[in-house]
Amino acid sequence: MVFVDDGEVEKTTLRQGDVATDIHWVGTVCFKQITIPSGVVDDEKPKRWSVSNELERGPVAIISHCCELDRTNGVKLTSIILAPIRDVAKATSPNKIQELIDSNIISRSGMTYSYLKYFYVPPTPKLPFDRGGVIDISKIFSVRKTSYDVVLDRKILQMTELGRDAFALKVGLYFYRQLLAA
Amino acid sequence: MSAQIQNSDFGTVDNVVPLRAGRRTYGTEILPTDYLIAAHGAELVAQLEAVIFRAVAQQQIRSVVSAFDAVYISSLEPDLISNHSIDKLFALAKIEDRSHEIEFDDGLD
Image (cartoon, each protein chain N blue to C red):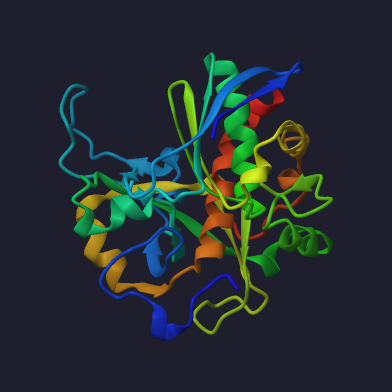
């Protein structure tokens, strides 16, 4: 089971693997569509800017460590790391989805492959994905620490210990594999 | 308890020693089954880290924290720390990534 029951979701703190809804996917902004008002000279910091395309928003999973996120630990939090969750039904290779689901626990006996970029989350009434979604580790972005309460207010799901371990392992291995190949 | 592990393919790991239970490190309470693996050189330590991270997924190891030239592991099965197990863990490190075989038609890429 990836997520804890509703009654076990902690409402006062964020944890790694939490899912929050209706969050701007800041990482999807296209730099080429950012416009800075005319009249701003090169060495002047613009007071405002605009983006000509629609800003996508939706559910996100939290990547940051639990110990950083827990305010009672006294660890200095500098940012909150997030990753969007995409609708698995939009996959162009639906025949691969079952393989992806099976690879959530990477070191399962006999496993020789994985989909390190994606972590599958099963269907739940809290998410608008009938067939489940995938946390896209390649689309990680961060927001300021001052967004903590906004993200907390929109927290809808919390991972189990086992789910969090499997998720964190995939995140780590997604970035670590180049060293393995060497 | 202390032990010495030799692995000709990846070098030598010196000293596998139990950590003192009750202390806390990196926010984790140390249990009687927690061990410290000390190894020479960044390359060998990096290899060990990669292998042990996979053992976490198998639930044979509770957690792992690494720093500089040592790898701290928390084992649920002390026998895991043996020549045979280390070799097996290295074999698990060879995972093929198939992420490129799935794309999404949602306009986000």
